[in-house]
Image (cartoon, rainbow, N blue to C red; front, side, top):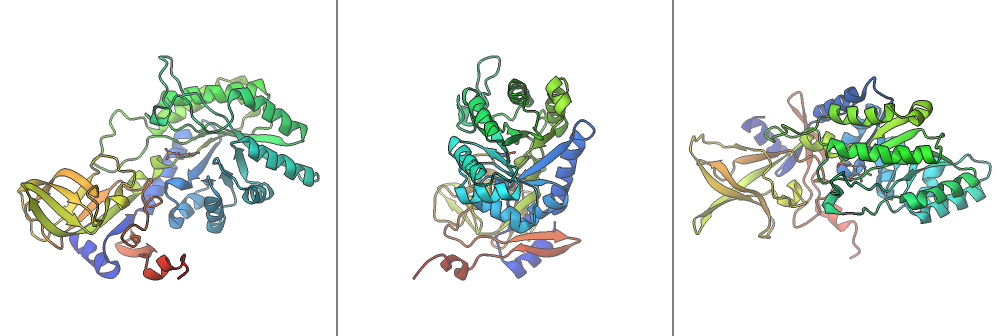
Length: 408
Ligand SMILES: Cc1ncc(COP(=O)(O)O)c(C=O)c1O
């Protein structure tokens, strides 16, 4: 990426903008496949919530992935993009979309009893149609030392059916002639450790054995993996796709039930395949010094780069019109009038930095575009560079878009 490329894109589409690298995304998906290849039959359900840019999801579809969706909106989006194979998760499934998904024969992982009631009603009204569903199992992710690894240090997660309840749910569904074809064990952890998957897989296998889930076609361990990261992020000592594959398939292949029933192993990667697929470019408008503190003000915003407001400085590159070997420390601050709009803190910037220069921030592919609101600014466009040419993946939002939801 060169300064003149950025200037050309900026002339045509303005700043700030996201850059998408579709080839990198495909590479990531294929690396995950390679890691599991020959070990088991693998299904990848791409986690829409992480980044549902349609052009990105289409790459996943063309690579043979299922869509993994968690809401009515994501379900509709997956169908619009052309996915025929959809895994439907999430705690809220309105009756209408749940029935639509039953008719579509999506892989539906039920999360709560109210969904079971809807499915049973549907069954009563459609006795001639084969009905099958999946169930999400509530996993206890406490290790041998008694430490819970569930995200946010929770001891108890809220998703799925607890072990004490799942037997009753299975029996009600079976009595109604409904097949259980999927078991889902996604559990977001604080450390994304490989050892967590041993716990998840063992708890899932126990349920499969206890209730003889012999119709199971999808053994779905969910997402929550480490994986790719932008250049500049230290990934030494972090698990690889292969480490997860070995652990998950290792646990499964030593189990008799799994050997006999041989379901596909499903993974639902999100951040682990998208993190290094997007960058974000903004323009420097002002260099300021106030009480000895230097600020670079850009037209970008932290709400585009890290809406979750984590405190890590992401990898970044400055593109200046004037070269300089000297640097000084500054905060890169955003365009919204919020003090907390700090994109990078105490970073070394070229001493020559000035109005009209650019900064590119890498590693912004996950939980960014899908979380950034129309807050103060229009939503930024997304550009893909292919063979040196810029393609518009999403245009900048405009006033008509903003007003279209309102009555005036
Ligand atoms: C059900 C489900 N699957 C997959 C994912 C993707 O997780 P990650 O982006 O951590 O891989 C999530 C994220 O929370 C999820 O809730």
